[in-house]
Length: 358
Image (cartoon, rainbow, N blue to C red):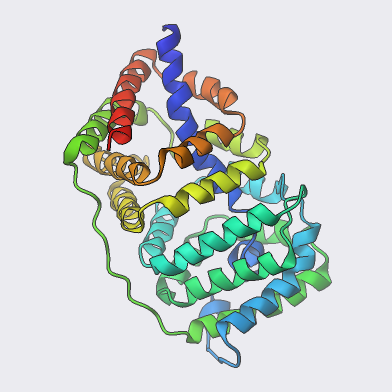
């Protein structure tokens, strides 16, 4: 097995850790749909019923932020026990993944960037308890509300409808909050939902997945081909190693900030293209949630070209700040075949070299 075999997991798992960490990091600076989703998801009809626009999106979103802030301050964002248990115990589904990606490719890239910038400012301003100041919470909430207000309403509804286990999440989240705060927040959310429903949608031009050509494309395709045997052996419905990592790894401010900073530095067209590649791959998955090799190639190439669009220092900062990577490395390594891992690592080195040589 040797040191090279272990090193492949050391490199590849950092990327997996970043993905898992980003999944968790989104809970730390809550926006309107994050902190109130357990309330709002009680009925998708709340957002998509009759619309009565008495306020602007910004006004309604600011009111929601102000109303929900007592709950934000009362939450332990370093652990978020309810969300951790939900992510660890509720298997993902094809419909949910498809709905999330389908909504994502239809979001206005400019509004997405504004929302990420607001999150970055909020993270940089938050204290040791992971609570950002009210002003930043308002900015995040307003930015997210404007982003969703411009999106196709049927695609937002599809996300609500496809979220698995949402009723149990509703109950668990609601039970840990003071009733007066949750009731007031839910009313503010419903008011915002009506304004969002009445807002005009903005059509977004679809961006195709990047081509497989060029040095980066060729190297990434080779990596996809080398790693596919490992993908075939993974239970993508549960991914126990990553779920365990998400639940047991506390967040850190530096890691969240680095992830957001890297995202802001990436090419927006390549972000859309990579999201489209993922959507195409999800549409093609079978009952085991494994996508065909051709789609895995397209996703791998899209991610490689996306990473190459950001300054290397910002990507390195993500690697350097992702917590507990070595533990994840070892756990992930124990689930894989050493020959497959070593072969994938060699292909990874070639892809990394191509990315750095862009």
